[in-house]
Amino acid sequence: MNRKPILIIFLISFITLFACQSNEEKAKAQLKAGSDYLRHSQFKEAIDCFNKIIELTPENDEAYFERGSCWYNMREFPKAIADFKKATDLNPNNAQAFFNKGISYEAMGDVKAACPDWIKARDLGKPNMNDRIKICRQWGFQ
Image 1 (tube, rainbow, N blue to C red):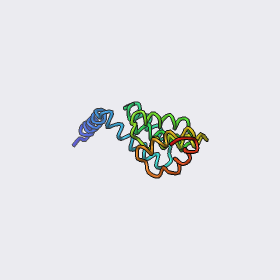
Image 2 (image 1 turned 180 degrees about the horizontal axis):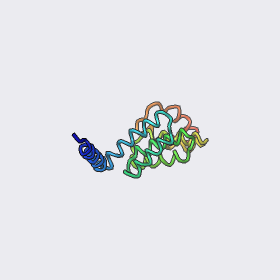
Image 3 (image 1 turned 90 degrees about the horizontal axis):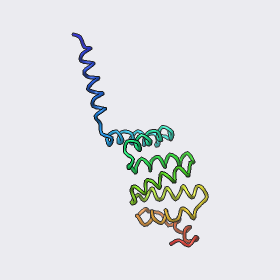
Image 4 (image 1 turned 120 degrees about the vertical axis):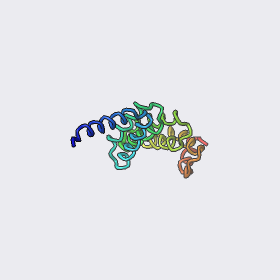
């Protein structure tokens, strides 16, 4: 029995199935891969995945948030801030993105710039914000 035609049909079917995936499905697969890379501190590989997601689905706030987390861990704070800002622009209810933007400012030595983000995170329900808010009160924030 000649298995070559069966193998060719299988390969064509596999390629067709993958090519027919929606951008959303491809983005979900990349998000899982990128999150795994991030969890294992493989930040450049994770950034590549998140970049692909942003190409496929430019309104994906999770991709910006996760890429911002990579930039933060790589001590690329201005890039982290830009991505966390984009994540909060796309999803204004993302308390963690506001908090992370604040800690990125803090890491750059600009606690005063962090305060509006920390206050927003608190207002959105992020727990354990008391110490951060105390710091902000010194700058006149409530």
